[in-house]
Amino acid sequence: MIAVFEKTLHLPVAIENDGKCAALGEVWRGSLQGVTDGVVLVVGTGMGGGIISQGKLLKGHHLSAGEFSFIRTNNEHADNVDYLLGMQGSSFVLTKTVAKAKGLPADSMTGEKVFQFIEEGDHTFQKIFQEYCRNIATQIINLQAILDPEKFVIGGGISANPLLVITIRKELEKLYMRSFLNVVDANIERSKLGNEANLLGAVYNYKQSFHLE
Image (cartoon, rainbow, N blue to C red; front, side, top):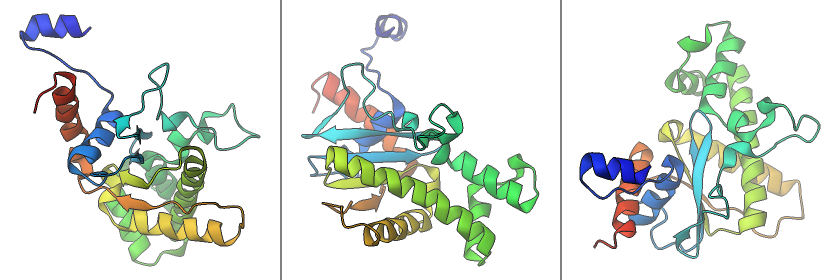
């Protein structure tokens, strides 16, 4: 595939997954600068992102490391796609759930409107949002136990509102307080790059691929 692009463009080409590029962007110019081991979670239509291990992007044997969307979140319904993290952590599913609770068409709801309802003190939507953040917090605890990163970075369009990371932190604290089995508390931070992370990461991947300064 790369050869086809290079022949067409008459330029060298480097290709990488957009979520993995977001992780590289955070390493190069964002919240993972100077961090050897970190995890980037990109909250969007699914749950993208990437894993940085020993300062490098972890790709895995089949190049699928960091495909967080495919994590199963419920043993009883493990064969149901609704219980994949890509659905449980999807900003689209959040807006759809809020729209249903308000009796509105799914396509009429946006992330901005969801936060507006929450900030206005609507208890129904606050509960929906807390459960949404709890699902993400639960998987952060699992990933902390498996990968032991120094830091988690939360990105994606919905992370532009600080309330997302604030609420995930609160749900993490609740889970920690109810369990004595946690070895290390996860350190989470909002992306400094936002939706620019994957674009900057694509540049960084290109520079790394061709050993450019």
